[in-house]
Length: 304
Length: 277
Image (tube, rainbow over all chains, first blue to last red):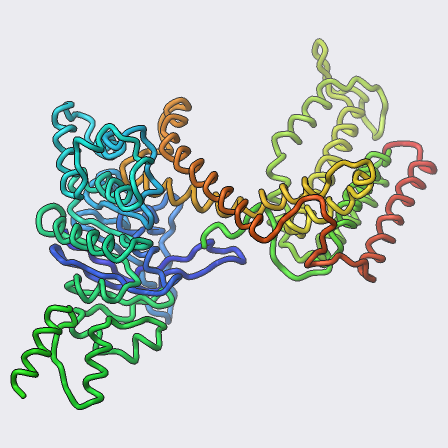
C-alpha cells in the first residue's frame, strides 16, 4: 500500500482564537516497503501528519457537513487536500476507517500508557478481537503468541502476568505487540525509543528491522534521534512549522548540515565526524550509517 | 496543543477582563439580587441595559454569548410553557379577552403570557451574566477571587487556603488529563476500539480500556506532584504570598458604582411602579 498525500492542510481549533495551523500544504508519497523516517521539532506537524494516516484526524472533506470550496473568478481553483492510503481514499465520507485501522497500525509515544487489561495476553489480544470477530480461540492464541514472540518477550512467562508488573522496556514491547498482532501492512511508530536507555533503544530498533522484513511491509518512524534515522531509514522527511521541508534518503539528507541546523535539528554523529574530517582535508563518502562510515574511513586509510 | 480552551474562557484583552475577579463575583451576586428584586419589566430593563454594557465592554463576540443562552433553551421553553398553561389570572393588560383558551386545568391568559415572558427574561439575564463571568475570568483567577472572598471563614478556622490549593491544582490538571484521555482514546481507537457507537452499556464497557490507563496516569501525576511539592517544602496552613496580587483600580470603582446604581434603580422602580408592565 502506497501513501499519497497532496496539499494536506490541518488547522487545530479552526475559527477560534486558539486556531493554529499544524499542517500546511504537505504533499508526500511513501511507497510500499520503505523504512521511512519523519524528523521535526515539537510542533512541526509530524504527529499531526501520522495521525491522519489511520484516520484519527479526518480530512475536512470526509466529514458530515463538508461544503466544497467554490471557485472564485479571477483566482486559481481552490486546492482540496487529498490523502490516499492504498485503496483507501481518506478524503471520502464512505471510507471504512475501521478497515483502514486494521491495515495501518499505530504505536503512540510511550505506548505503555495504553496497557489496561489484566494479563498481557488479554491486552495483546484486544486489537485482534476488535478487528476480527470470527477468530477461534486457537487462532487468537497462535496470533498472540507470534506477536509476543517477535517483540522478544517470553510468551509462557508473560502471558498470565499483569502488564503493570513488567519492566519499562518490557511494557513497551508488550504494547507494540498489541498493535502488530493484527499484522498491519503499514506500521507507524511515534518516537518508539523515547525514554529508553541506549541498550533498550538498540533493541527496539532491532525489533523494527525484524518487523520490517517479516511482518509489516512499510514502517514509518517519527523520531528526534538523527542517529536512529541515519542508521535505519531508507528515506526521511523533514517537517518544520507544518510544512514539509524535504524528503530524501539519509545519504543526501545529512549533507544539508546548515539547513538542518537552521531548523534547530541535529545531524547524526557520523555526519559530524565527516564534517570534522573534511575540515582537515579528508573527504569521506558514506551513507552515514556507522558501518559504512567505518568502512569508508578504513578504505581511506588503506589508500593513503 | 489541541484543547487549549478549557471551560469557557475567551481570551481577549478588555475592560471586563481586567476587572478584579473578586469584584466580578460580587457583581454577579449583586446582579442576581437585583434581578430578583425587580418586580416589573422596567426593573429588568435596567438589568438588561447593564448586561448590554458588560457584553459591549468585554469584547466577547455576541454569537458566543448567545451560545450560552442556547444551552438553556430547553429550560426556557419548559418554564414558559408551564407558566402559560397553568396561570389562571384574569388580569387584562391589553385590549382583548383576558382568557384566550381554557381546557380543564389548562388555560392561556394574558396574565400567563406576561408572567412567563417576565420569567424567561429573568432566566436569560441570569444565565447570560453568569457565563459572562466565565467568559472573561480564567478559572485560576476565579479560584483566587473565591479564596479571597472566603477569608472570613478563615477566622472560623476553616482551612480555606487548603481548599483553594486543591481547587487550583484540580483546575490546573484538567487540560493535562483531557489531553491524556485523548491520547489513550486515540491509541485504543487505532487498535479497533469503537468508543462512540452502540448502546449505553456497550459504550460504558468500551470505555474501560481508556479509563484504566487514565486512572493510572492520574495517580502517577498526583504522586509526582506530591513529591515535587514536598521537595520544595510545601506546607499547608502557612500564610502564603501570591504571585499575582489583586488590586482594586479605577475600573473596579466604576464597576462598583454601576452595581450600586443598578440596584438602586431597580429598587426605586419597584417602589414607584406598581404593575408588572
